[in-house]
Length: 145
Image (cartoon, rainbow, N blue to C red; front, side, top):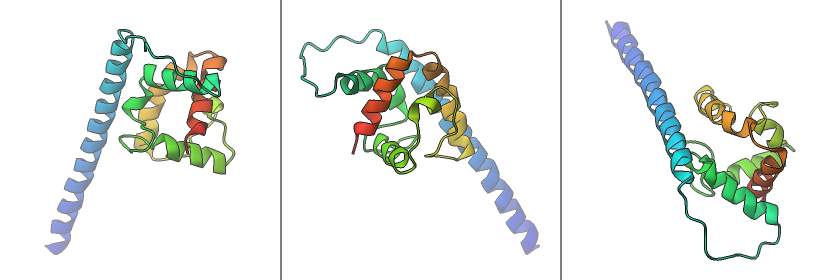
């Protein structure tokens, strides 16, 4: 009797886990699409900032424009890892963000199947980007400490 009770609890827990992953995936996908749609209506910044490395500033703008911020913030974990954590992991393991963005290498930060599924949906955006833009985004990410 006790075994059946624990089996039922485990089954319920597993089903809830699957449902939560689907909810997180849907939220991330809808948020990404929303950010993409509304980013085209974004007003240009009237203030000009002097940047040490222009591609870092460009990368930050592209990161926001392409809705990466829907899942990744610089210091706060939302759906995916923080930009700071991504930079630290890629620096430590000498990984190449550009090949990851192009779908030519596996993720090294978050290897959870659910997170990978979410990120794979977003990689469709980066796979179509120019190498120069991917380099700018990579420079931006790697500049975060």
